[in-house]
Amino acid sequence: MLSFIIQIVIGMIMALGGVFYISIASSPNYLIIGLMYLIAVILIALAIAKVLKGKLV
Image: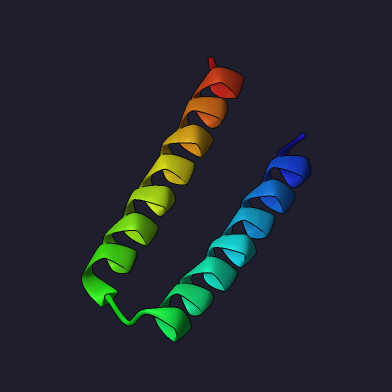
């Protein structure tokens, strides 16, 4: 189960990295893109924390 979650997270990070790269290449508006990337990372971290908390309890 945990390895499955890790695979999903790695996939999401890779996908976000691709989107991040394309966004910079097409329109260098770093602040908005950086903010979106940060929000996405925080949401992923919260999702992982929720799953792990559910497993521990």
